[in-house]
Length: 414
Ligand SMILES: Cc1cc2nc3c(=O)[nH]c(=O)nc-3n(C[C@H](O)[C@H](O)[C@H](O)COP(=O)(O)OP(=O)(O)OC[C@H]3O[C@@H](n4cnc5c(N)ncnc54)[C@H](O)[C@@H]3O)c2cc1C
Image (cartoon, rainbow, N blue to C red; front, side, top):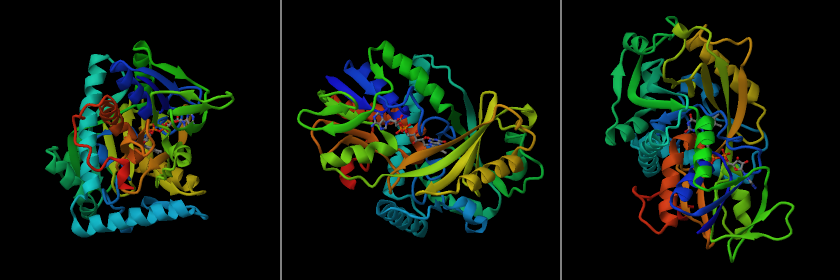
């Protein structure tokens, strides 16, 4: 089939690879000058377990009340009706999850997809020899015993699926991550030895090359201004007529909802902004070895090659809270790994928008308009979910049953 993909973030690139691998003629349209320039640029890096990425699903981990505003979403002054409606649905689901202490079906669907995706990513990395920065092991810091309570639903989902989660005391946590500050008050930690962090953008650039070698064409600096139906077509900005394809896959991140609307499909997709700070290693002994999640502040600190990346923050609407988010990131990095990084040069500060649906998991499958397919809404764990989402979508387009159950991942749920 002749297939167009709109968007070359991590989701578009993995989709291009899988479809090209299946023998389709793939063209990727990307408005920016390179792949992974938007949400996929400098993610926190957490790959596994995917549901542990802060804000992965409502109720996956509740911000502890004592920590106050730095761990709660910051709301802009003039939220749109769509953002208010999203917030209501997210909070309602989070309350239901907290009340039952059980993972809601969307969280279980997310866990299933993340597990599948992890396996697919490892297979691709090995078979294609993709050398990307990564680090192994996830440590969840519990500053007080109450932090563990907030994680009950997500830990249940992980344990039900067979993940290894060790509860360790503060001394054992410091033995796993010897760079942790001795001054950091710790009640204990959860250690997930199978955890993984990696450099999303680097992986996307390497996989883009692999897709190109399979014949996929990437058109950069090429914006799609409109999608048109019957036959499925994309209108490239500046061209006189739309280009027709056998199928069009929408992987346009936060901009997907606006592109889809003229086709008569409305999605409750919003942008939840967050930030990351990447700094060069200063002293290896005081830096993380793997990825550390600070449950209290909902931030992650990951070792990526010769850099350390701290990431977090959740700003909804036109928020001016970016400076507060950055303060939290610098504070948490300083509390956990003082002296581990250099702040004097080579520091990269980034702000990105998570494409969020109100129940957590993405949409992978057909849209309401014939010929248009969706792979979007990966929220806070798109890096962790991308490889599996792409394979599952390619299977559907090819008329095959996907290797994982797709319940809870369709567009019909909205
Ligand atoms: C602070 C932060 C930390 C995060 N940490 C993690 C983490 O630790 N682990 C994890 O798994 N996930 C994490 N995420 C989430 C992850 O970054 C996203 O889920 C993922 O990058 C989404 O990928 P995407 O390809 O859907 O979107 P994007 O990367 O935004 O790609 C969409 C692409 O579509 C292009 N596009 C849009 N409209 C058009 C158009 N009209 N024409 C042509 N091109 C178009 C855009 O330019 C863009 O390149 C984090 C996100 C943030 C913001």
